[in-house]
Image 1 (tube, rainbow, N blue to C red):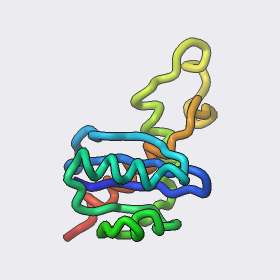
Image 2: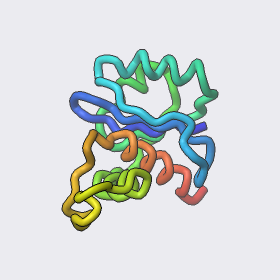
Image 3: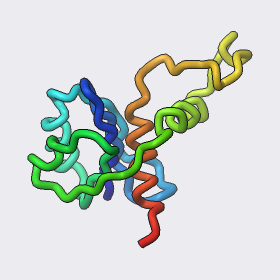
Image 4: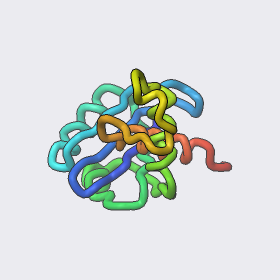
Length: 125
């Protein structure tokens, strides 16, 4: 199992993924202050082998004593928006607006974390 993390200054997106192409087992966003407790809960629920973390602060993972790898997170925000709208298509008048002009109705750090985990899993061995 891989835990993807999109670290931010106030919150972290996270995604637990079993393998490339699989549906995420967990997807969420936690306040930075609460992330360590969320990390403990995720570790108790799933046998997480590695954390794929986007370039940024990794102190929460390092302090937890978990193995981690830094993953390039360039353009994950734009790709996360595309993925979000694929999973949650706009309704009503919003479906008439070009997707590139729409903003999600909630933070999408969890989708960025999912993309980070998928990027790690797709790296050549």
